[in-house]
Figure 1 (cartoon, helix red, strand yellow):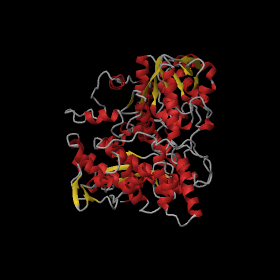
Figure 2 (cartoon, rainbow, N blue to C red):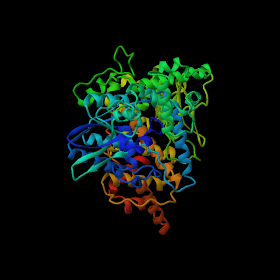
Figure 3 (cartoon, rainbow, N blue to C red):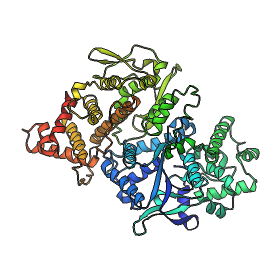
Figure 4 (cartoon, one colour):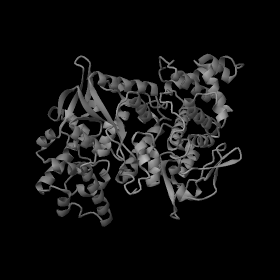
Length: 620
């Protein structure tokens, strides 16, 4: 993330660019989105070989323990963390090329699962939710930005005079008087009760290269970052005598020398000396727009009043960049919930941009896109969010899981939602969902239930919202009455997965998931088995499907103003669920006379009563 190869350059010159500091009794700001990725891969200060397994779909209990351990240490050191997550991609127009490029790389990684036993780095679907659960339980202030959080993190750190922790090389460019430390360069010092960080200060970089801090945003943009790709820059590198395959040091020296020799202090000066003159008009306009956005990204003085107010809990401002044209303040309740991760950013992408982008996932790329399993559920969500823009009599039948058609193009220029995701085996492209084809009703036992409109929900009663949620999953109160309310979301998600994805068969998978969930809930799993190299990617694909169903179930519950409580606890472990599945198969081999359910519940479940209650709700 960030400026191409800049982190490797800084680390190669850390003797002159990084300063060892000890931190305690102070505030720090953590880049939440980068922290999720880093901490899943490695513990702070621990060798990278200790990463959690990716290929089995997530090791969330172990991940939870890592998060808890880190924040417990900070509390001991009297360090008060504030965590800020990236927001919706609605306002990231110029980042789309980077997002698509990363998606293709992720798809290629997933493809390698069929031919290699080597693990791959694709963040499991619910890792960020697990992080947020821990933050809530530890009462750690956090907030979700309305866009790319980097400028707000930098501005807030500057105002609060505190350290920034991240793994994003953009922070080498921001002016941070109290420094920036990469997660790779910090460790826990228990003896001295402090956090040690090899910290970067912009002044060291400026002195080393004899340049002004005001020109750093331009240097970063010309090196290439998330907004300006190396392909974009090829046309102007010849002007600066830069070869596309030069090292980061060679490029940086060439760019700085060129700017110095031309007496350039701004992007306008670059245009004046003809930096873009060799480009065709169309490419010139696109590149100029990207460069302007990139330079502004680093240079702008971000408005942090919203972020600061929420983190300090001093006041709750309602102004929003997403809904800045909302003169009647109809959407303030949405942005308030969104900032605390009680309203999905996925939904804001749909409302504001009519577009969603699915990240690559652990999946069998020989099968249809893993996100296809939630198409019908997404259609209902789209209808709730955009109901004012479509009027029809289309009916969603939850017992069939029927979904509207996805189109490869939008030749007729109709109102559509773009869904970016894997197409076939190794490509990433958009499918189009026509608004006029979205459902207007949910059919439950021959009764048509109108799909509610988003802005009517906050005034509606909980019972009505709950009944609609259950109808979407072909359930009613009677199906779930034996379960505590905290289990209802889990039960309906498993019910949908079993009936629609597994088509009511593959009981071994159902039993394994139920045992995994109940045993983790009661904290009965003390040791996790070593992952076998011969894992079945199709089995992993199936369990990750359930995670996406559960995730969409949580999203729908949030959009409906949470008629049901969410169980904020790690209830899935890939290595554990695979071991359960293998044990069930072994037992079947030993005694074909035993029934599937008896094997699962009687030999492996720690709470057979809860197990059978969920099983009854799922299969009823």
